[in-house]
Every structure is written in C-alpha cells, then in structure tokens.
Image (cartoon, rainbow, N blue to C red; front, side, top):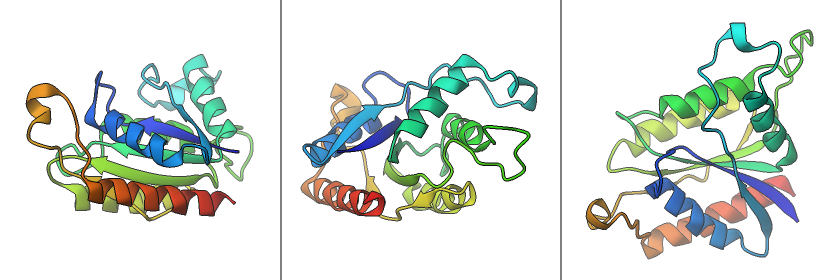
Length: 181
C-alpha cells in the first residue's frame, strides 16, 4: 500500500484544514496509508542553518523521503499561502547534499497536491501552489479541492464539508493514487 504524507498548513489545534484532511483520510481508507507531518519546530530558513543539518529539518526530510505522495491542506492568508508552509517548502526544496550540483532535494519528484479551506482567495493561493510546486521539482497533481468555512464553524469549531467537497476530495485522492502507481 502507498504512503501519503499529509501536511496541514495550519498548526492551530482543531484547524479547519486538519478537519478537511481527516475527510481526505477517509477517502483514502483501504487504498493508502496516511500519516501527518510534524513540522511545527522547523525554524525559519537560513543558509547559516543548513549545515550541520538540524534534527528538526532531518526529521521532516525523512518523513517526506518515506512518502510516495505529499498532500498539503492549506489555509489562505491574505490571498496567498501561509508563510510557515512556504518556509517548510523552502527547507524541503534545498539540496540534501550541498556538494551535489544537481541539487536533489527531499521533495524532488514527489507527487504533490493541495486542498484549501478558507473564506476567500482560493484562486490566488491555488495559483501560487500551481507555480511553486512544479518549480521546486515535484510532480504536481492539479486536482485541487477548495472549500469555504461553514458559518457555524466560527462558533463551534466544527468544519463541515459539503457533499460537493467530499466528492472532490475523492476525485483528488484517486488522481493522487493514479499518479503514484
């Protein structure tokens, strides 16, 4: 069975993107193993920190290396991707061996996809991911699921995916599985 690594772009406890990821996990049940990346301790990128490799960075590199695909669940901040997610992708896109002029990174050629939960800016953030992920040499599956936050979630903290969103997640899961087979 294939291994899919989920990166939840909001580190907030009970985040709406984490709840969307749980719906995607159900769409993959029995078809792939799902794990969640623990990346909250990755520092801001600086070339001064690249060597020796920090344990926090090595840990995320190892998790990405063990995965067959990466699925990012991202909020939208000011019509863009979160700076924290961009920082993580910056680390993952750096050469594992700095003396290797080919620049092979931990995320190099990994199948990647994105889902977005926000109340606006989906198109702009999706376009950033569409440009960024192929640029850092991933195999991007452009089957993006987007969802608005249901009104009641702001009061009770419970994101409710519509039937349309659940269908799109299933379609996205199938596209990811097809890309890694």
